[in-house]
Image (cartoon, rainbow, N blue to C red; front, side, top):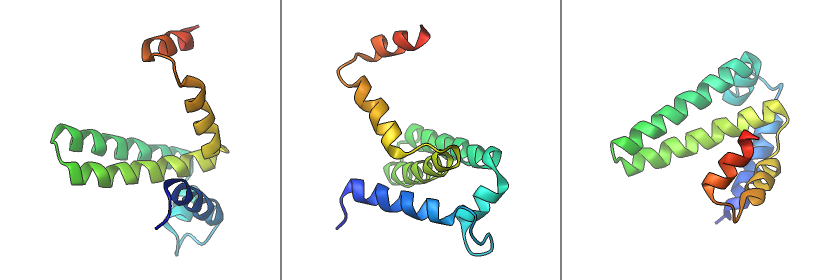
Length: 108
């Protein structure tokens, strides 16, 4: 069984390999071809679907929608030239900060 980080690494590799690929054979290539606005729209849709699953207390649906959201977020990151390591670095910077202090620091 793959470890969590390995799953994300493999997914990142697959997403990057589909950039500029055959839009007839790859959903990811089709999303890239449609542009960032469509990719961002999919991220928003999946986020709303996850929120609704949470409100409805549907654990199975929340798991499924979380996977969809992460997948589409990673496509958006790839389109923007953001690596998962960039997100991990940002999270590491926040470690040990209270949420309130971190949010106030961003208001700067």
